[in-house]
Image (cartoon, rainbow, N blue to C red; front, side):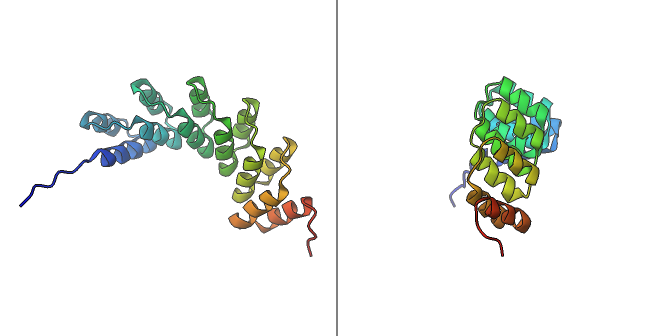
Length: 175
């Protein structure tokens, strides 16, 4: 009978992500000692869960995908983490903007815009998909003009009134 050799690297990465997301510092350390190497997964988990100390640990150990972390932090509404990632080189502010708009976090959307995010059309779609009218207005105030895209997002997300508003802005007759 042949012995079955398995590579548990993926399992360790998933365990690291989960431990970081749930803030279990001891489990994070144990998983790292077991050989978990995908520090970017750990960083993303820490950013999703709002655990700044674990995010710093992942960065200190070499995690480099600050963009995915930025999206996760913005989606979940963790402003302090978003600022940490910006300080550590995150520059894809459009990705952060989409995360903030999807998650309904206006303060983070404004932070991304101030830092140079300019894909307000994608932000409009994300805001409408999530049913976040105030964020949709913010994207429009910052130049979004593809109201059909906003209406599509609102429809796809199940937000009828927002879809009607976007369709009306686009010049479509509503009933």
